[in-house]
Amino acid sequence: MAKRHLSRNAVRDIGTARVETLLRLSQEAVRAGRGDRARRYVGLARTIGMKAQVSLPPDFRYCRRCLLPLIPGLNCTVRLTGHKVVCGCRECGAVRRRPYLKEQKNHD
Ligand SMILES: [Zn+2]
Image 1 (cartoon, helix red, strand yellow):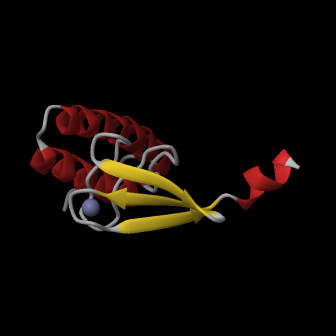
Image 2: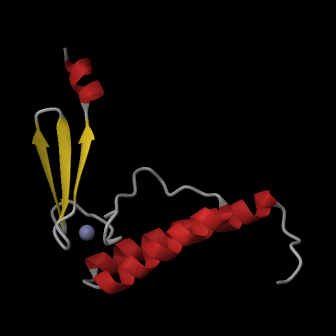
């Protein structure tokens, strides 16, 4: 392998830019009906993110099982049950539950 000459910060900057681009492309691909491409983009973004120590933006939702970017109304269902937000992937059926206790408490 070539000698490493980029500082960790430089790697992180480049990584951030590439992750952002890939995630944007993946969402465009989903909307264009190209789930295969979208999954590939998310996979690449995750790999680059790990290598460059960049975490994916928390507001970017994707299926943890099949890596498809989740867009409510298009390829995922969002339901409220009790104290959980339930997000289901329509492609593979994976379900993710997140609590929303904080938001409920603020309502009182
Ligand atoms: Zn899925």
